[in-house]
Structure formats: C-alpha cells, structure tokens
Image 1 (tube, helix red, strand yellow):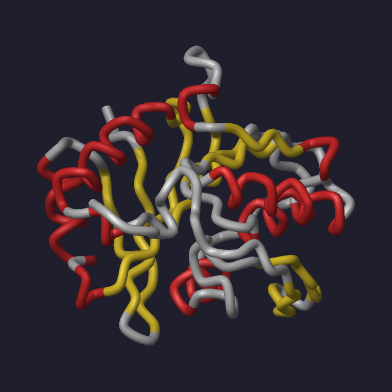
Image 2 (cartoon, one colour; image 1 turned 30 degrees about the vertical axis):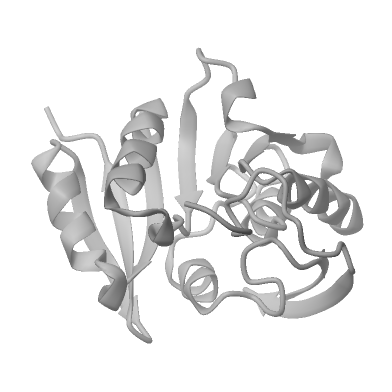
Length: 204
C-alpha cells in the first residue's frame, strides 16, 4: 500500500483536531478526532452497529480486553467505562490514532486502565477475555487474514471475539474462512449491511 491511509504508521495529514459526539447504551461520549485516522468525522457506522448489537461487558467482567485497530478509541472508551475493573489494551499501527486514544481515555476518565500500544508492544504472554474489532478490511485479504490469525489465538480459552464487517466487503467470506480455521463463529446480528460475528474457541 502507498499513500496516506488510516493504517499508515505516521499519517501525513495535518493534525487538526475536532470533537465528535455519540451515544452508546444510554451514555454520551465526546471524543477528540483528527485527519489521518479511521472515520475521523463521525462514529463509523460499522463501529456503531458493533457497539449496539454485541454484548457489552459489565461491571463484573475482569478483563483484560483488546481493542484491535483502535483508531481514536471509541471502542476502548466504551469498554473501559462499562467494565470499571478491567484493563483495556488499545492496539493500532497508526501513531496518531494511539495518541488520540490516550487523549480520549483521559477525557472519559478511564486512562488509568487503558494501555495504548503498538501491536509489537503487547506482552506476548497476555491472553484476553474479550477481543473487539472493526478490522481494517481495506488492507487486503491476505493482510486481514494474517491480522486475525495473529490476534484471535490471544483469546483466553473462555474468551470471546467480537468483529463487525460489512457484508459487501466480505463479511460472509470472513465468517466462512474463520470456520475453516477451526473457530466457532456465530453471526450474532446483522444491521445496515454489517455482520456482527461472535468468535470463540471450538468446543471440546
């Protein structure tokens, strides 16, 4: 890939910041955004469907959780606020996205439990009880499969992964491919052309 994409490590677009607002499960959020990160002008519709239809954690969920491809941090902030005992790891290759996620974690008041890191900085022994992702489909099929193959095995044995993928961008084929890799995959919900997939280790 060439050019300045939201998955570029160092975006070249001017770092001009603004705010967006959205509501999840009755809670209002105001987060800082900037060009050069994913969906910098609004809460991405796929992310909105994921946060509306997947099973959000509760105060009893201990974590840790993983937000894979965190962008400016909407999923991270929602997870950390809903599960006040859980640590949330926010992972993105984009340095500006990581900076904005930390800014927004402070805005929401959850920064003490959020670890914003480059993918290679996640401790290798760490296993996650939940993985959440609106994965970067536009990186291409081989890269997407490599990404999921790297991170889904980091789920704890009883962990669950939540993915949202647009049907027209291959949501159904990703579901089939994951099943071929041995994962238990359920289409948890469909809305506005998006598939919400629930991914778990296969039952013994």
